[in-house]
Image 1 (cartoon, rainbow, N blue to C red):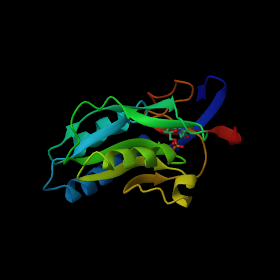
Image 2 (image 1 turned 60 degrees about the vertical axis):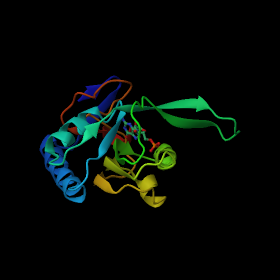
Image 3 (image 1 turned 45 degrees about the vertical axis):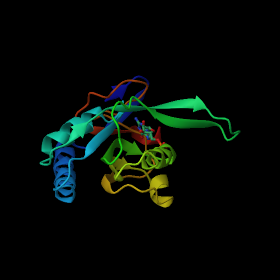
Length: 177
Ligand code: 5GP
């Protein structure tokens, strides 16, 4: 499959994703069986995963889509990122962040800290994909679909320059491009 200038090959089939989403939803439903979590999918990439996941959950839940925005921090270390689009109070809520893919996990780590500081009851993360750097740095992700190496992937909500989000499976750049 060609997307813009790059050739991609199938990496994880739609069927395998479907199976994994059901497994993740079953674990989350079991762990939250007496709770009503608030799901926070991080746009744009996680919209497909979040949509499939919530349909499989058997616990009552609320869902609110958020975005990560960058702003120029006061520190010289570069850009800090923060959550935007939060409309409800998170106080005393059980939060589940839904991520498409965790790579370095640096933004995620900061967001988790930010949410914990708001008086939430708990904050956990469900990510469909986790890359090697996040594993090596022990970034906290309670529910992981697939552990992958460092290849660039697209499809199932993930894009390459805005394209490819509508593919049912997940694809990786062919020949190490
Ligand atoms: P991190 O902060 O963990 O380094 O970056 C996570 C974000 O980078 C993801 O939410 C996603 O938007 C983007 N990203 C990381 N790896 C990939 C990839 O292989 N493909 C695509 N399409 N986006 C990625």
